[in-house]
Image (cartoon, rainbow over all chains, first blue to last red; front, side, top):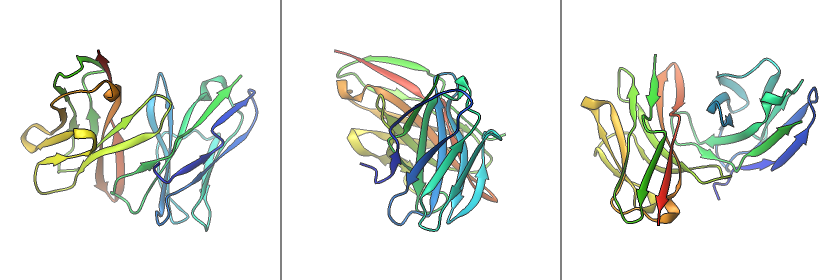
Length: 112
Length: 114
């Protein structure tokens, strides 16, 4: 158990819908990272937050957004969902930039 | 541009055989280096890390990795593979360019034959 929790574990929704994925980092970790993992694209970095502020952006679509709250949990919002958004979404946390990341178990999103 | 290359997409070894998974990076300085393992349907778990110092690092589950600056490599090794090692392995680097940037390789899927 990495100490990073993600909810829900599975999510099935329809095209055009909006979903929110939630992540609670390890106790004491200030950085949260979001990744998308699909069979054809591999592990793709989406976005990083540090202590509530956005720090880095990767291959995140404009339909996707994220935020980190004062209690350090983070949410990833996916809107206008398309079939191609079906993937595993991982959250990871680290105590500081540059240190190892600890990954949550992931949320499997299926868009029908 | 900075990148991480894992040249082997799939590797198959027999149980008890030795294992080496390759990782090369492209970066002008020495990055921080990590190996992660992902079992099916699971998140990534840290196997080992290199920040500085001794270039041979020991990790969990009997894995080790050696940093070779001249080859820009950080290969993962295990002397005797167990069936439970079947998983996907990711090499990752962290570079500093104003902020810390994490770059993951595309992964190597390990299959272990009984």
